[in-house]
Amino acid sequence: MDLREMRYFVAVCETLNFTRAAEQCGVTQPTLTRGIQKLEAELGAPLFARERGHTHLTSLGRLVQPRIEDIVARSAHVRKQASLHLRLQGAELRLGVMCSIGPARFSRFLQGFRACRPGIDLSLVDATPPRLSEMLLDGDLDAALMPEPEEYAERLKVEPLYAERYVVACAPGHPFAARETIRMRDMDGQPYLSRLNCEHREVLAERLVEAGATLVRAACSEREDWIQSLVAAGMGVCFLPEYSAVQPGLVLRLVEDAPIARHVSLATVAGRRWSPSLVPFMEALRRSDLVA
Image (cartoon, rainbow, N blue to C red; front, side, top):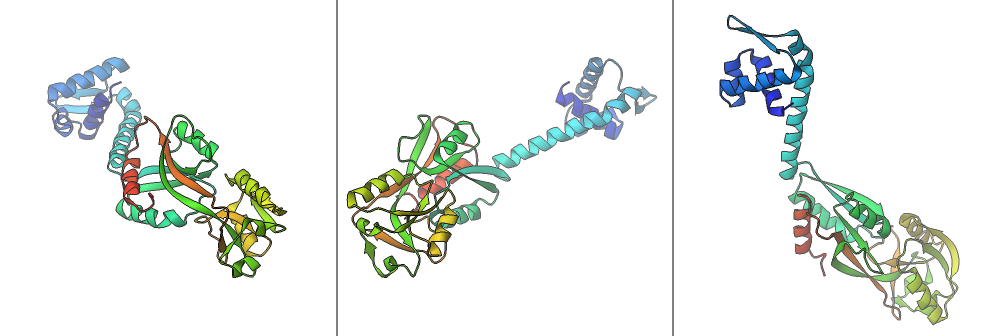
């Protein structure tokens, strides 16, 4: 059945007058009549009875009326939602974020973007780089923020944003807190809280070996908030990207002889058309101070 013909049917049901229904639909009466006749032919029986200028529904017409009205109403709702989406009212932006990226660098940018584009609903998805790459390729994300120490997936297009240095995080009462910087060999014998999602774990381990430093493993976790809370409580120290600290009370110190940094990028799928919500996001991001 043609949706246009179903709209004609609904209009006649509302007006019980073919002339007024045609005016309501913005077509001529013969056009509306032919549409109703075609619908009746598909259903196999008349939908309306016209007697001496009086129009009323047949038993078949009464039977299908609620179902056809529901289809027409749903269609109108879909068209309205699509229109709002294209006008960025209620449009969703699905942004993946690697679990080790802290919000410090992005909070102000996202607040400004939201103020300029209040109709865009932002969904943030937290995951590891392999999972984010998979979700991007499957169409579950529009874009993803992630650092990748190795090569990105072949189909991903990467736009570099900024670099952030690795620092040592400690509690305010720790001896490191009284110094401006530390050296890698100062880590020898330190109780260490291991961030399992740290993408530069192997590089940091190599630098420690080169410096002759051996850590004392105190705990490990995939949860960044747990590791940072334990550091702030004085249970040990950890290496941390400088913008990832979110726990109050953390003291961050640069490592003067091991300037390791990671590069955070925005990844999208190469050749895939951007969603209406991603276009203004990318434009705002490229104008922002997030891009080095």
